[in-house]
Length: 462
Length: 101
Image 1 (cartoon, chains in turn purple, blue):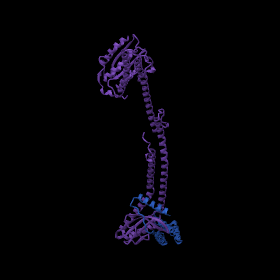
Image 2 (image 1 turned 60 degrees about the vertical axis):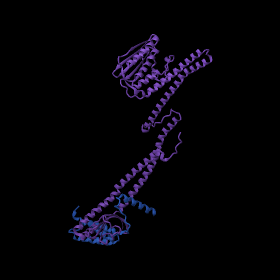
Image 3 (image 1 turned 135 degrees about the horizontal axis):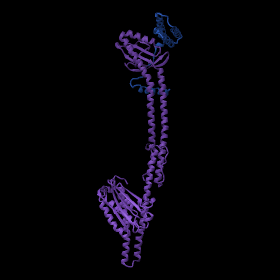
Image 4 (image 1 turned 90 degrees about the vertical axis):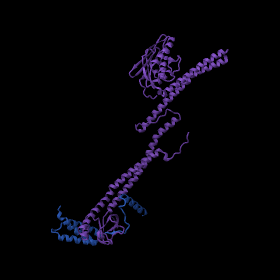
């Protein structure tokens, strides 16, 4: 078991999730604030710059029409008509000395033409702020045009403060929301984690709790619970098979041991000893046969035999089965009737199908009463081959038929007949390997086993 | 005090960055005086209004006369900025008297 990892904040998915949430919220808030600033305070700036540009265009036309005198007159007119009391003009000569305008002097740092400046001014003894733009005119003259923006500046300041505070609030909410998201994440994962820990500790009955909201977490919990259910069923199956193996093999092993022990203690002659060894060997051969059957079923279920599939005719192998079991049936006083077609083509493994049918016929002969009749009939249909084996014995009760194909399952009627309980399990495995089905039905009386094999086996996952 | 200065500088930097970088500059000069808020300009503007009134073919409106009187009175009382604003409004009315309502 690896040593427990030290908790680190950057290794916490919950914290990463929460940080992502907080980051996205903060970025969204910042983007919104930037847009609001651009749409309000930025708009005021753009309006001021547009007014200055328009003013500059008008004055340049006056300069072009009448030169310096016309420009001086125009500036005087504009100052006189400036009802809003926000205009700033300064016309200066080449040495930046005032020619006309309402500024007492040219600011020394504002001599670059076309550049916008924020200019501190004094109006009636009160400090104010103007936004101005400098222009170079012909003959060395310079013009400064501007607007008093102190009110706009104050409004812009208010907007900026409000947006900055809004950003602080958004960051605070993002921080709180991040904790909420982290806790939600942890609570959801805690349920999965608790369940996994309980299962790791051996309690397979634990399941992930559902919130009932039907959201993605509930869907995940349902998938995990389904997975756990399937694991539980598989483990139960393994447990049953293990128990069955232990139970079914204990008796012949114990019998073989007893015989050998008895022979070693009580055998009076080498012949008695040899006979006891032979009987024990027969018991052990039976055990080996059970293991071979189990391995064969496992091999079939693994699907490795599918690589050997080919287009085959089942008539000859099935005729061989009939011929073999006719003699066996006759020895038991049972009549085996067969109805086989001339050709029964399928795509599959003829040897496996032959063994499966042999198992069915063996069961039918074994469970048929003395003087009874067992039948083996094969029908060729467009969809595939239907192999039907019927006996007139006690049959299998309806509630046991589902279990009859499980490994080592033996019904009440089969308790006292020889067998390992693996025959129908092998037939079922062969049917599934070929993409077919095994159906057990009541033959009233007796049992009818119907093995359907398609013409071409599909891909089947067992 | 320091906090106020620091805050102002921060805000200025932020505004400069946002208002199209490079197009904004804050002057570090001594503040310039706006001369149109002075009593001298008030007198100059009053003379201009009077010239316009005399040159007008029709008598000025009552509002223009009242604004002129108020402006002159405020300028005499040392309230140059308020007086200039009223004289400008009076001038505006006189200049646009022919425009009609």
